[in-house]
Length: 360
Ligand SMILES: *[C@@H]1O[C@H](CO)[C@@H](O)[C@H](O)[C@H]1NC(C)=O
Image (cartoon, rainbow, N blue to C red; front, top):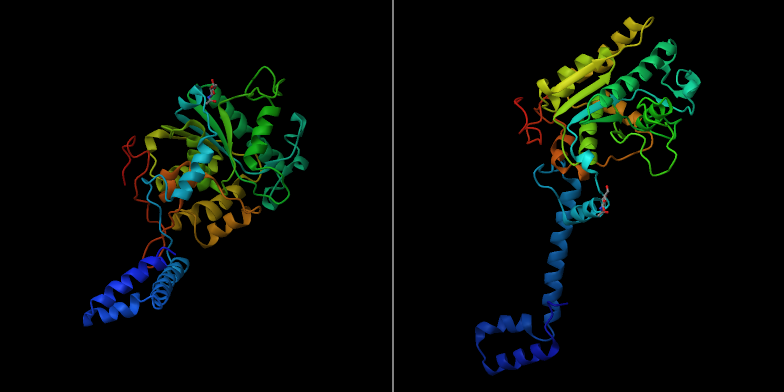
């Protein structure tokens, strides 16, 4: 509307031009004349609309989405406002802001039990088919991961224990991580005075929390760092993973290197199921875990992507692009375009570059 002059203005202009009959102004007269002004407006508006339409088309059909600059905190005003509305609800404790050691316990299944007696009972676990059979040893390994993680957390006042794993099974109402946390509290691994707090506002153990979105081991590692950042407002200096011994190589050689985390600041505590089925499980991990990650470092193609897709049964979106915008580049890094290797290590800036001696 502002493109169209008011009738008074245009009639004044017209009379002025009529008084000065300059031939070169005839064209302008045609465009600015009172009857024609609408034509000019329509032409300008149509041109703008076409440009805008073409721009949108280009945006919608652009083959490669732009990777957000990890040093730019907010990619749009809308994103900034959305983030502010969440940030305004966050009031971290002083204790949380002092933490520097991230202890990760990756989940492997979902516990549905309520009582401590149900922790080693297959009926109270949502398991994959391949996890059934020899389940007693397997379940006791899961429980050992939880208790060992808790022991480590109790032994280091600067640590935050993060149980990590999404709602990966259709038969469950909670995430893997939440079920591990529930198991931990039920079996009183934090040795708190009471495992079930007497009042609602009492946190049983403030240095343990859940990461509810990871769909595989690589995401256990990366998302737990992002979750640590949500909880403490900072990135960890030290990471310890408590998991299967048979996954040690995958974590220490592949996942750690993929996120350019220093070897010197990375620990791995391995606990495998004891007894039968060990050799078969080891072979399974090598064929279905380690090997695929040697050719697809970020687990974002074909076989590994399909695994994640099958585990995201409730179509969940994680929160880490908004809570850890400086990890945006790494979170969306998926090499393997035309002429590019799927093992190309992410080279953008990372918050832990300044701490590390590990540089690719
Ligand atoms: C944040 O929490 C602390 C207690 O941990 C409290 O003293 C403080 O008033 C809270 N701040 C706001 C803005 O609510």
